[in-house]
Image (tube, rainbow, N blue to C red; front, side):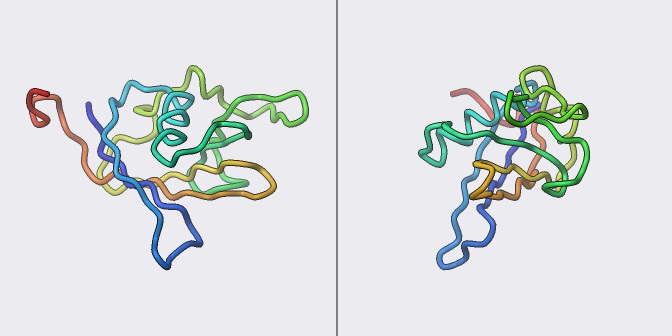
Length: 120
């Protein structure tokens, strides 16, 4: 499965800041974090979290840290994107840099199979 995602930075509208990505559904959330970092030109210096509606919504998916951890935190290194994002129109939040709280809305625009993508 290939997911076409629109990832938009919330709170910035003039002009809006967003990226469209096509990713394999078998990526982990850790790998998706790395793809988002590259797409936005960031360097991965801060903690991150994925969740359906932002802080306080479950599941929370991220990397445990000695200064910040949550017993209910699902491990981003082993949790697959395809466990939560499989249907066109589904949404998820990506929060980067706790404190500055750069919140991104991830929307599944299309769910494709490899035959729909075509050769490289």
